[in-house]
Amino acid sequence: MATDADLANALSTSPLEVVGRLVDSSNNALVVNVDTTAREGETVAVYKPAAGERPLWDFPDATLARREVAAYLLSQELGWDHVPMTVWRQDGPNGPGMIQRWIDGEVADEFINLFEPHAVPTGWLPILEGRDANNHPVVLAHHDNEQLERIALFDFIANNADRKGGHLIAEQAGSGQHVWAIDHGICFHVEPKLRTVIWGFVDRQLPESLLTDIQRLIRSFDQFRSLVDSHLSSAEVDAVLARARELVELGTFPAPSGQGPAVPWPIF
Image (cartoon, rainbow, N blue to C red):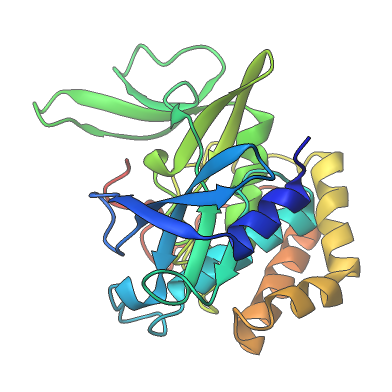
């Protein structure tokens, strides 16, 4: 039976065959088959070569794929399995870049969606109001869900500048659904950049279990630092620790900083 170690080894070392491109991606995201017998055949993955990245004015060039790897490593250090396995490859078909396990799921509209103003379901948290393409009033809301609590805190610690609704993927897992978070290329800036659609928990007390996870990250932070040393600058890593400590001191889910837009656009 294949293990996570088998998958990590396959993503890191097995031959890759480009079979398609994600047409909505602005950074040349490619679909690849990973040739591995350890997992009884081919594994599908996403490959984002650094050479295909669109330059951004506020992030260093050719660093977005490395930030995707750092996001996976942060998720693992927290013990929150919401970022698909992601590794760095020096020998990709189009040059160095990140390889991420493909998630066979759907956009998580059962966890975040738009509703008519008086039709927000019980157990959902309204985020903002607006109008759709037909000028009808709508409300963006997300489910009051522990998985989204973890992702909201992860996004704060990672300083995610682009948590769109479409970056949450629901995959059937046993009797329920597991929410995966993808597209973390513009995370880890040293300046506050958090833009997200998961604002429903603002000012809520941090659950003790999640607070414990964050405190564990802080205590073992040198381990995380060593893992991301080749992916982030020292100042960016220091900022991760500062944000984690800020959460512990705050004791509640953070609110928008007021230093820029609080939500990405488009929201999906």
